[in-house]
Amino acid sequence: MSKANTDVAEYKTAGYCLFEGVLRSEEMDEVRTHLDQLVREIPETMVVYKDGEHKEVAARPEYLTEPHAKQACWLELCRHPRVLDSVEAVLGPDLILIMSHLIVKPPGDGLPVAWHQDNTYWHSVQGTEVGTVWLAIDDADLENGCMQVIPCTHDGYPEMEKFSTGADDLLGLTVEVTEKMAKGAVSLEMKAGSLSLHDSYVLHGSEPNTSDRRRAAYTMRYANAKTVSVNTAEHWVPVYLVRGEGGEHAADYLDLRPGQPIPESLS
Ligand SMILES: O=C(O)CCC(=O)C(=O)O
Image (tube, rainbow, N blue to C red; front, side, top):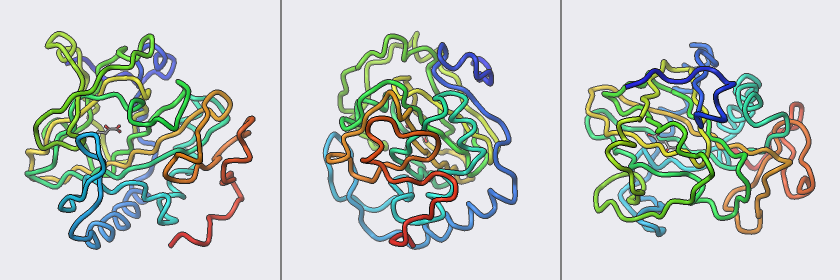
């Protein structure tokens, strides 16, 4: 398997880039403390988007969706200056935060994530300059189910058709990936505090966690505020302006740029 791309100048071609050592170990200790608390409080069931529909399932820590819209600590993490510096290097200076998801794979039985593109799940988001930060909360490697990408598959922004995996995995849906394409996959192995950024059209997924270690990651999804529009009437969480200018849709976004207070409604 080839080495992961760490050159931001290659992002447009490869469709992803790895940024090492973005958050310090004491910052990650704090993140893990918040996460452990959240995992302890997981309810018995959850409504999740799986197999192409919303359904109630037995709760799992892979499905901690949109924590930034519920708890201040996750929203603060989404506007952490060093996280945003990485995002700016790829998407430019005007940034909106559109979604987030904590994906925690427990030791031994963490769910796989079948090959997919993100964009086909987000009908309220129009545009191509959209990317996901995947922040390693625990060290991530192939054994505990780190993320894998198939470089360059975003080229031309294809909208691939989804079909059922018929298996127990995070999404229940996948796309046609040939053996040759899968052979080109790159594993994004990284230490806690490192992060990757991937394009919303690039193919990616992950294997189950077969190790005796947890694999937790925080995915934070951003877009270029000037070239991407979000239909906030249809979008399921508020859209936050986190850096720069909001462009023609600025009035629809909540201002969370440096110095702006976190909404009081968040715990
Ligand atoms: O965490 C994973 O294994 C997959 C993440 C993913 O699919 C995403 O960030 O869009």
